[in-house]
Length: 163
Image 1 (cartoon, helix red, strand yellow):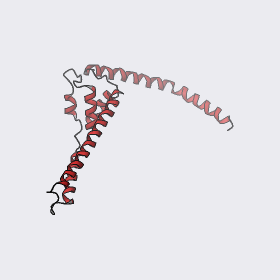
Image 2 (image 1 turned 60 degrees about the horizontal axis):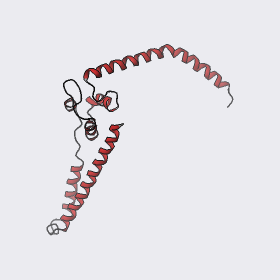
Image 3 (image 1 turned 135 degrees about the vertical axis):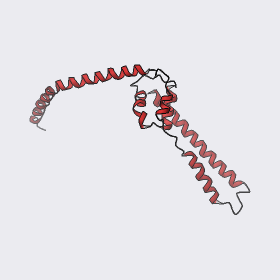
Image 4 (image 1 turned 180 degrees about the vertical axis):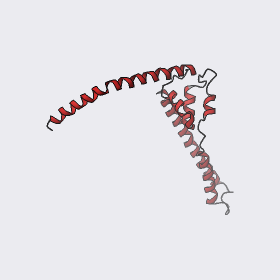
C-alpha cells in the first residue's frame, strides 16, 4: 500500500505544479495585456488566444509509457531493481506502462514479487505459486462431486421452506 500513498502524494504534487503553471500563465497574460505593445491595434484577442493555446498544449504533453528497454534499465545483472520503489512507482504513475512490461511490473506493484528480489528468486516464486495453484485446482476437482451433492441437497431443503 505504500506505493499507493506515495503515488497519491506524487499526484498531488503534480496537481500543485499544474495549478502553479496555470497561475503563471494567467500572470504572463495579464503582464502582456498591461504592456503598451499589447495595446496596439494589431495585437488583440487573437494573440491572447494563440498564447493560451500554446501554453495549454505544453501542459498536455504526454510522456511515452515505460517500454521494455526502459524497464530493463531499472535492473542490474542479477535481476534486482536498481531504482527505489518510490521512483519506479512515480515513473509508472507519470508515464504508464507499455503492454509488453505491464504483467511483470504489476507483480512488483501488487507485492507478488518483493522489490529487492533477484531474477532467480522471482523464478522460484513463480514456480512455488504455480504448484500451489495446481494443487488447489486438483483438490477442487476431487471435491467437486461432493459439493454438487451438498448443493443439490441444500436446494431440495430450500424448496420445502415456505416463503
